[in-house]
Image: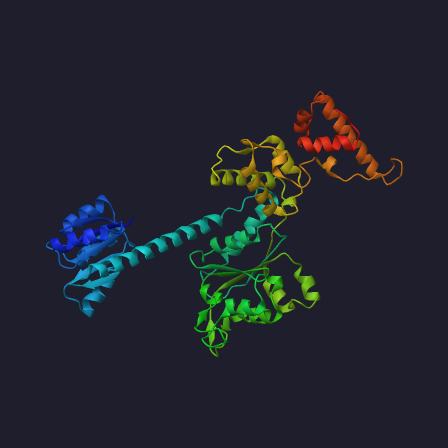
Length: 461
C-alpha cells in the first residue's frame, strides 16, 4: 500500500483525487494549505507527494524545498494551472519528479503516481540488494593464519584503487573449486574506493565464445542477423567499477587477445562498430586451473597470464585452514537455522568433532551444503554426525583409512591399521558396556557405521 499526501487548496479536486487513488488500495491524506501539509508530512512521512503550485500560504516550490530538506528521494508531483518551460525547469531544479498541468485527468494522475511508486519500489529493492552485497563482501570468515594473511593482502590491494580513475592492474584469484574465490573478488571491490560503482560478474565457462563476446563487448544494431537494436556490453555496464571474470582459464584464445588490449588501455569496440569505446574498469579474474600448464598446452596466452598475475591472490583450501572449518560450520548452522525457522538448532559435540576431522575436498562449498542439509533434516535441535552425511560417516581418522591385508600375514601397514581399528572398537564397546548407541557416541560415528565396523572385524555384541 502506497501512502500519498495531496496538498491542494481546491477542495473538490483534492477530495475526488483522494477517493480515486484510494480505490486502488492507496492510503491518502489531504491538506489544503502548506502549513497543514507540513504537519501531515511530519506526522507520517508519505511515499509520494502530490502538490499544487499555488497554495494560500506558500508556493509549491517552497513546499518542495521543505520536503527536500528532510527527504531527498520521496517522489513529488507538482500540479500547476500555468504550465511553461520556465516553470518546468524551475520545478525540476527544485526537486520535483513530475509536472502536471490543470485541468488534471484523475486517470492520468493515477498513472503518474503508480509509475513513480513502481520506480520507488525498484529503487528500494536495488538499494537493499546493494547493501546486502556490501555486507556480504565482509563475510570472509577465518581465524587461521592463512586467512588472516589473505585478508591483509586484500586490503592492501583494495587500497591501491584510485576511485575509478583509469585502468588499474588486474587481479588474479586462484584456488581450488569451492574455496570462495567469488567472495574474495567482491571483497576486492567493496573494500576499495570503487565500492559505490558497479560490480558485474560473468562465468567464462558458462557461455560459448560468440555469446561471451557479445555479452562482454555489446553490439551495434544490424551487426548480425538477430541484432535488432544496439546492446551495451558488460564492460560498459561496469564502467568505473569492477568486472569479475570467473573461470578465466576457459576463455577462448581470440577473446583473450581482446581482453589483453582492454587491460592495457581500456579501449574496445562493440561488435559491428568502427568506433572505439573507452572504459575505466578493474578486471578481476579467477580460476581453479593451473594457468602455467594451460600456457604450456597452448590454450592460454602467455602475455595475458603474465599481465593478469601482477596482483595475485591465492585462496587456501579449507583443509589448510586450521580451525576454520568449525568456525564456518557454526556460522552456517546459525544462518540456515534462521532461514528455515529452526531456531535453536546447533551442532552437537560429536558432529563438531566429525567436522574437525573431515578433509573437506569440496572446501567451503561442500561444508555449506552439508550444513544446510543437516539443519533442514535434523530430527532434533542437536545435529549428530550421521545427519551431516559425510562421505566417511564422520569416522575418526584411524577408522577411515582403508585396510588391506595384502596377504603378508599381518606384516604390512594395512594389517597394522586393521589391528588399531579393531582395538579401538573393542575398547569402545568395553567402556560402553556393550551398548552400541553409547559406543557410537563416544567414537563420534553413527550406529549403522559402528555395526558395519563390528561385523567387518567379526565382533559380536
